[in-house]
Length: 143
Image (cartoon, rainbow, N blue to C red; front, side, top):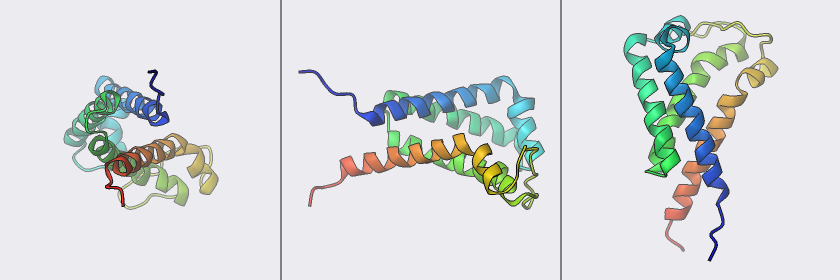
């Protein structure tokens, strides 16, 4: 009997690959996208926070790839991506610095600028919500 590949498997793989790649890049290029970037955008304790985020992205990305506690991995990554949206993309939406979070240089500001800059973050956010939702639906008791 041939098993059908569930669409969510492809979503898990895509999300896992994106987060593993980003985690590895943070590790390989800390000044550009790791602790250096965290410091530039105004995150506290960037030298400590960046390796933690890097580890979460790699480990949870791997967990999604191998389907190991995908709901918990997705929840952890949802925290990472929500933080990225708040610290880097919401200032673009507002067109100004927000609290300690600096305004990145973007070609456009406001709603369209936000949607342009946040397209991957918003896609990852939606995919992570789908993974969590699907996992909870499968584990739900039939009524």
